[in-house]
Image (tube, rainbow, N blue to C red; front, side, top):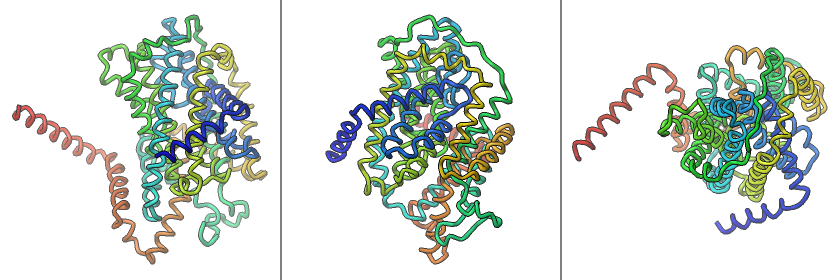
Length: 511
């Protein structure tokens, strides 16, 4: 424990220099700008910045990406409150109460509450990141190829079952991501798969162009297909939150922080689910349920705390297991790999200092959004007045340059365009891109783990089911998928109610 504290202290001291402070503040500021613009996302921001920071030192590049990640999700609350349009999907839960407060002439107060919730939520997540990542990595050291196969499959199953309204569509997209990940030379014997004689496909579909296409170019097409402009609510009151008002909701902060971290850790759930689950939990226990959706401070605080605490939560499994908790965390993990850092159980063995460096980076991002959130709000609001017809062509140019810059291959630009067009039409049919991204990121791990496991077992599938951890992960994966079969779900729900009724009856009888 003392060694961990020493490494953490060393990480904090290493970032107390003008260059690191400039990178951190610049990344957070750029992230807030992107978050303020409806239609853009944290995934797009990180993907584009990865291409721009490719030549930088690894720690400086990752610092910019993490600060931009946190800043983007925080900046999305601006358009949610003032335009009733969430800047990112994670800010959708803030629209109802944030915009309602703005219409009541309390836009500044709503932004202050959102800033307080974002700051406390991210700070709570940072504490969990520092505490749980080394412990989880130590447990993961006992994992082998068999366990990692089920872990990757569980990640795809979770993303498909929770993201979107139709689990079948989610699983289809997850499987599509797995299939796309198999294109190119396989990892053990370099045998071409699904290349159809195209030499360009031998290297596979590059991750960054695919992500830029799925989240960047597809968003450009979606935004331009619906160019409806919203009027901006004027902000006349004070932005600075009242300490008494913030402290009044400390239970909401802790509850939403826990929910956000847990939803962040579970693969594929993401920050938007953390916000909605926190909002629902706050409404369930609130004595003023009728205010929710009409300007509830409690609801806005819960939503912003839940989505922001999910950011460090999503980084925990990415560092400790090599399994990203959300789509932005997947791109962040890809950036780490590009910079020569391999997330996973061996990270704490080979480069334990980097884990604590990430904790320090996320802390810097947390205080950066507090600084810009309290003292830079009014200048940043000018970004919301930029017309989409001006902004989207610029984003498209950045998508093109970013896709080309990774390997200087025009083929990557073609992949970005094709995947972006496909994602645009799939999203219009209700297919979400997050399961596709998880499948794409986890595809290589699943493939290699399956093949290595079969080599170790001489082609036998038995160890995939008989090893203790494998059996648990397999059972959880199967149960997760069965929960979305209507008949089974109804029976389980009925059994749960009967059990709860029986326990309640026994307590009353004993009393």
